[in-house]
Amino acid sequence: MCDIIWCKKDFEGKPCNTINYLDPYCFWNWEGTINCAECGAVYYIHMIQGHMYKGPEDRPGEKPDTSPLYADKPLEGYRFYGAGIENRTRPFECLPRHIYLGVPDMVKFSIRNRPVRGWRPQPPDGGIAGSYRFNWDLKRLSPDVYEEYQQKIKNGEVTEW
Amino acid sequence: MPKDPRETRIEDLPGPKSKEELEEMKAPYEEFCKAKFDPGNEFSKPQALKGIRWLSTTMYIFTPHSVSNLAEMGAEVIKVEMPRMGDPMRHCAPFNETYLYPLHDSRPMTGTGMGYLNANPNEYHITMDYHLPELKEAFYSLVKMSDGLTECYRPGTFDRWKQSFRYLQEMNPRFIYVWGGGFGYGPKCFGGSYDILGQAHAGLASVTGMHEYMGGHATKHSNWCIDWYSGTQITFGILAAMLWRRKTGLGTMIEFSQVQAATRCLGYAAPLYGRFGVVRQRWGNWDTQLCAHGIILCGKSDYPDAENPQDRLEARYAMISAFQDEDWKELCAITGMKNLMDKYKSNNERAEGEAQIEIYAALEKWAADKSRGEVCKILQDAGLLAEPVSNDREYYENEHWRTRGTVRWMDDPIFGDVLQHGSYSAGMMSKTPRRLFWIWRPVGADNVKIYHELLGYPTKTVEEWYEKAWL
Image (cartoon, rainbow over all chains, first blue to last red; front, side):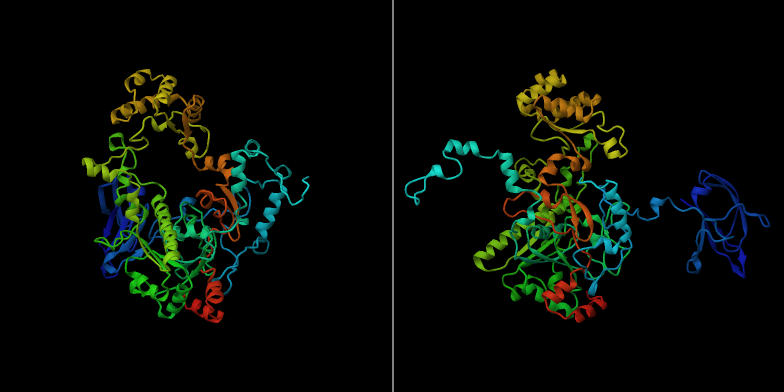
């Protein structure tokens, strides 16, 4: 569920017609002022448990406490203000937790500490028409992993099982 | 020595001198098997299907697996994939990072997911857009020099592209053509299929899992067991078709519905319905015919401090079996279920639904203050059959499977260190064992080998086709 403020103020000679999205995470229980992402008009709202208890009321001239998460203009071909646009939408500085970023944890060694070819990017080794050789030369193609592997052998970390 | 050196006397020959001595000198069965199967030395033995060439225009697990069985037995398999992208199964992977790079030379940041494992081993991987009239010649050339093909497109698709059995048998009358898919011909001809659909539609999921009365639901097996199972059944069909071809010189068309195959696992379900009008129900971790013969939940984990929840929380299930009257008495004596012993004297009485509910509840009550390991040890010490329900790690660490070579490490020529259990878990053969050369190859890795070296197209043509993304 996401409540909105549909701003219909005159802006540059026509109705603003911007939908400002109030994400529940921030606005679920909240009282204060918000700016419209397009025209900058300030509104007061009071939300309790996700319901608009008061507002939106005009508060011209007041400084907004916060901004909507994002906004769009569906009547004008979905012009869109994404999150984190200065003075329009709320700053968006945090990154999702690393597990949601889609950044893989690169594995270079199996659980018995022998090298796997499981990381990216791989050095190009395709021959004609994307053909690959039958053997992969660790020493030539990934000298750093080869070095690490030699170190593991020296330390006795490489096991049979 | 005999007077005449040409005379052979048994006492001069090495080896046993009498029947009794022969028996005495025989290696223990264990040693005999070890020497016969010799896990780890598969590569020194011949391959049963050497000389067979098979085309695999397949995707996902079901149809590829029908061919991977052949490849592990020594057939030369050419897997044809979509240019640049490859088999969609390459792009399905569980978890965060289980990709093996590279997928393809032009896509260094994309890898093949581990879901692709075991379905396409030992195969040559080429790419071809076989809609194109320009590549028809190459496709037909492959057909003329191959023994068969497995495809998985919707019924009639290959016919529309002029490469169905009707067309190919005219080029190669010995050709064995396999279509594997969802429903096969009939009213639902155009229904596609996945493993889960096979399990659901065939009626298998309706009898899997606990009864709703006990909080269960119709359940799909976590792994794609019907894909693997149906694929293997196709392989049987192929081997039989090859035998038929030796007798008659003629090819065969095999039409294989995955949904139909899953019905085969249902055992007595249809005859039961036919005779009594009874629709078979789910019975989860217990057995409909035998009791006690099921999996019970123990109170404590074997690894209460483990970090992995699969160990910490789930290592609590034990399979126990004591359905014969003597075993049942022993089980009751150990677990203190004397009242149940008197109440249910025969297996027929115990196998009744109400009886099973009472018996397994009592067993789980007895096991509530014990760990899985304790339960198994108590029962095994009493001579009963009991085994823990193992997880993957325990399977890997089990000495039994290591000795038999079922689970083993391999150094894949491209992808490096890979732990394998697929190829070597399918039974042992003393003369012509299965073996694994490589787990798979990048998309189009063998384009030059097949188009240039086998079919004789100049490398320039191959390169040109590649540039146009025809390959």
